[in-house]
Length: 221
Image (cartoon, rainbow, N blue to C red):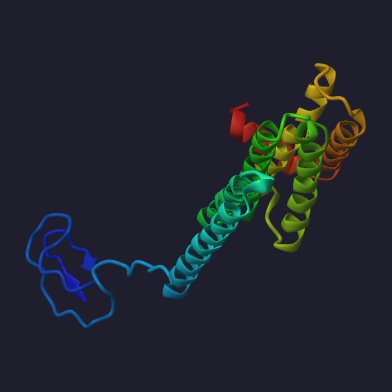
């Protein structure tokens, strides 16, 4: 291991000068560690799988476009196919980018799914199926999956309470729409809001100490 006589510190790696004072180092490098830690490289198999999926998507779109051109009597249904593939890729890329944090990934997936449902509702005539049914179902499933993931993966309360709170706030959005008179089918929104209240009550009763500590830390109380 090399040492700097000026700073009195040991320096790992094969560098010739001290990183603090740039003085020449004494001693010999015994190969115990590199100058910098190795950077993890992306798996070539994952990159290959991503390229294969992209290629198969292009092939499927080309086939659907050709069939639609040959059989145009049912309208331009290939546009819906294109929108479906685009929606699937949005969700897949979000999952790909946020794989390190499962709870954050779930929040991103839930938000993206809600936005995509609203956009699909707008594209298909705005019959309010997204607000009446899709959003309450998506938000309720989000809360259930978040609790299940936190229990299965043994995620500490301090690392999960923020995402629990975000899922509860999302689950109350359909209730806001109901109170504003936007929804035409109230039952899914009521069930979703009730599940959010039960979820919040469980957090307060069984995780009050870490729950309150996290609130104090976040809001500097």
